[in-house]
Image (cartoon, rainbow, N blue to C red; front, side):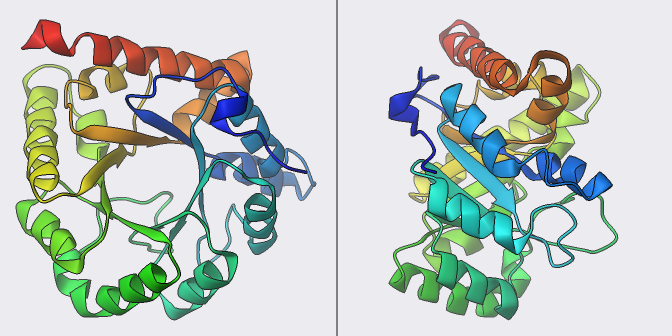
Length: 261
């Protein structure tokens, strides 16, 4: 089964790409050991709703997405497939075999519920350099999930990757007002630094229809990776409408950029 591309569906804003992370669909499936809900079917419905791509995180413990899911997604997807993995030899071999469009390296700890914090590129630079080179030889785009920290951004640029994904958790969970504004300013500075270093800027973690509007004041952000909020909204309105609603929230934020300047 070939899944639709964004060209086959009513497109969301082309100014900011929306990739939907389907991990939590797999979490729900695994909770009862049934074959449903199927992450590949969820991917199909997200793309029908106008999402530009699909993201999935293959964890070491396979707590949600499994190897078979990755294989089936690669076989079915004609839109962008972003595979999130830890920087390990096991995950690299899977990525090189499957050949997703994008590999995003993320930090991973067994005890965490979800990915908390960004990858320490400065400390892991030597190991990452080898992985980045191998993926480049395979024509796979590489992204690094990092905090908006100047040293981490500079180290990422030094590795020659095409993209970084800024960890937005501190902004998403900040108290409204000055605290959220301060976290947003940090993201804006990081995005500007990355853009100046010729890095494409993506963003994700903890984003909702409410807080993504403010984030869109950062013009360098070209892509969003959203999972938990879309799947949670889908409980009440269905996954197609959840994707469309998130896209509308992004558009509201993009449209308001000029009014904030």
